[in-house]
Length: 607
Image (cartoon, rainbow, N blue to C red; front, side, top):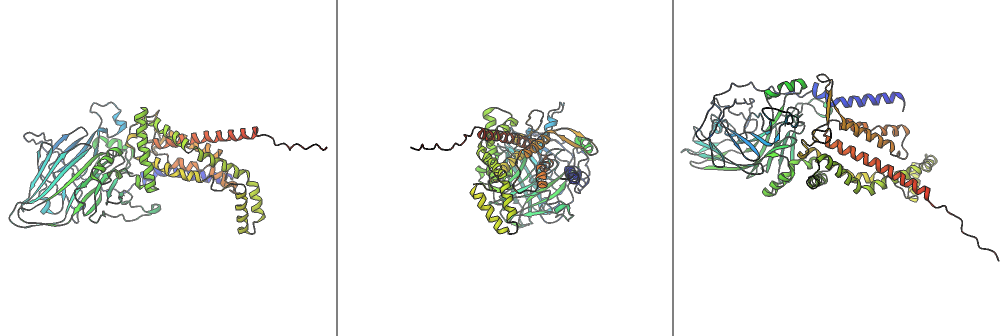
């Protein structure tokens, strides 16, 4: 490879590395400005219940049919909040819309880094429906359903009751009950307490808004999932992006609609937490729209210093058709909510209880390989947790142990691959001679090459097949590591959080703001080392061979900002592969040196 080609490749690699830094900074998607702040309202109290007033968050001016795009009536009356806490979460209910305003998970901090800093106020908790414009289980539609939007909250023995009486005689009652395993049940009733028949328009029940985990969350994993009884569908920021293939501009859709009376459950989620609604009867349709989210004042300076784009969420509703209520008639619906971490064992138990495959929220089936990848991802996650509990080791060391077990399991395949590649390399001169001899007759050349390889018991697939057999396992490990909440906050040597890049410092903060991540650099170095030890493929042009040796740099740039758990796995995998290659070479060299020398058979003496 000449100097010009090397310079061009170096420039391309540099641009590829800067792509993930410069594009989000200078070409961030347009965001609707957050609604103006409201003035704080006065504190209100009710006998027997501690109610705390909070400034309401104004909703985006939405229009359209009864769905997520329907306008939410913002009450003018002071907002009352009821806060209930159990062993897993703190639930905040609001009188504005009579729903669940916020869920805070008491065992999980909002930011792992912030939780380790000493603070008089203590760390902020990870939360769901954070800064959302509409509470969970708010009823959207026209005035015949919403009225003035003010509900009366009453604390019950197991939860909260929200009630509203409209002028047309319609009474809306919501009863929330807290449960275990991050579950919450809600029974909603539409009662016609009047003397006239009521024709109710279509109803849209808000199941929540998908929001980022913390100010540093890029929103890559923020989205909506729903299950139709057979497979899971997903919606994320790419669906609403103004950029199409190869960043070509396009007009993004205003909303997402899915389902045909088969929405078994729907979830708004980010990388590690989910808020899922499971209606007693499948909903007719699901609707989701992007909404702008206000920032908390405490993080505004931090976000401005990093020049991060405004946060965006996805407000989602379960939609139901119009209905007619005779006098004194009642329509009842029941929802079960899961609001907690995406922890596989918990989700699997709940999925078995309701027979609805709720563990699909983990997202294992969305990766390349579908069911095969999901199988290995689940098995690896269960194995990782089992080794952690058995060996009492940190998750960083557990990843190393699992990688070592993988290498032992695939040792025969990898060794066979290495031997096959070396045999092919040894036979390369004879194969080139055949190619040169029959270059004017490609069909005969291929036939002679196949006969030659069959005679010497080698195959061009011998070096590739073992790697292809390992790919589902590797992809499963890649998917599992990205979704495993067990790695969130797990430390290993200098790594503070295995679920995030191991950033030691930032280069030119405020301008380029490039993170310095050590593990991906070690991974790239080991991949280069391994590529230089790998024998070249037969028939490959020398220039192509040189390019293939430096192809690992592309993986370095692709995985530079991935989780430290993934780069740790890949680095250890490379080191073990290098050790195996050296050991295989040493064994082959020893075999050659100690091979017995063939001697001629003894001749018979003549009489």
